[in-house]
Length: 142
Image 1 (cartoon, helix red, strand yellow):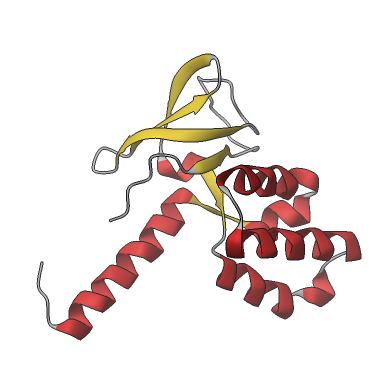
Image 2 (cartoon, rainbow, N blue to C red):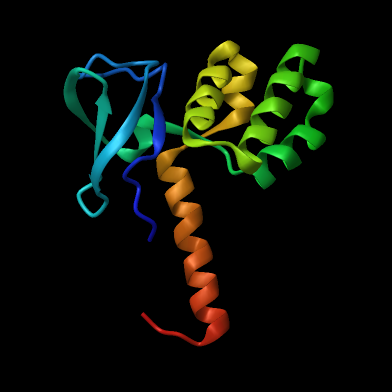
């Protein structure tokens, strides 16, 4: 499992209960305990807030975003398509600062948010499936 520390995340804008009051804000993961479903997120000069993985959004991986762009182009406004294409290019070889900028760009409309992000929980589920596949294909047991 990858270390999540330093990953830029977006607190889900439609989160119904947010004790940290950071709904719709971008932060950075400072630590996590996935067995307890606890992810600590920093937001600059405010205290670190605690979230579950399903309350946080991350940008889809480059290949998935690009595939979805091509598949769903007819469902998108031109501006949303252009924004998501720029985000996809940043994901290919952007700096950490550019990755934060890409997360800010995804907030430009409901469609960019919908097509450009996935919950951290879903991303982790996908990562665990890929790890299982690799272990099964290589014959390595856990």
